[in-house]
Length: 246
Image 1 (cartoon, rainbow, N blue to C red):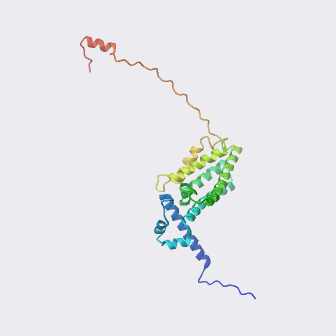
Image 2: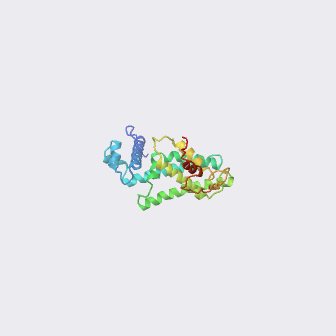
C-alpha cells in the first residue's frame, strides 16, 4: 500500500499561494501607477517599494527586475483587451452593436492602471524578444477588431470603408484616451467613450451617416476704394464754415 502524502492543515498551500499572487499583482499595479506618473526611465523600484511600505528585498521576492514588471503590466493590459474583444465577438447583436460594446470595454480598460501603462509606456523599453511577444498579442487583437468592422460592413450596419483604416482610427482614439485621461477629471470613462463613439460614428462606423457636403465659400464683397479725400458733403460744410451738429 502506497502511503499518501498528508498536507498539514496549519500550512494551507492553496491560500498561501493566493496571498502571494495577490501581493505580486499589488506590486505590478503600484509599479504601473509609478510608470504612468513618472515614465519608465525615471522610475525606480525603490519608489515602488516605498509606496507599498515594504523593503526592496521583499519586492524582489515577487518580481525579478524592472523589465519583468513592465512586461507583465503590458501583457496584463493586452490580455484584458483580448478578453474584451473575444467576449464581445461571442455576444449577440449586430457588428455595430458589438463595436460600440467593445469601445466601452476598451475605454474602461485604457483608463485603468495596466491599460494606461500599455498606452503610455508600451513595450518599446523592453528587450527585442519581449517586444516581439507583446507585439504578436497586439496583432491578434487588431485582427479581431478589423474582422468585426469587416462583418459590420458586410451586414450594412457600418458604412463602407477600409477596415484597416477604421481600426487604426479607433485605436488612435483609444490611445488618445489612455494618454490624456485623468481620474480626477470632469468626464468619466463612459462619458469619454460616448463622445468617442459619436465622433467615430459620423461617417466612419454608421451606415446611416450622410455624406459631407462642402459649402461653397461666400463670394467676397466687392472691394470699396479707399480715398483720403473728404466726402463732398463734408467738403461743402467746411467751405461754408459750418460745423457738423453733434
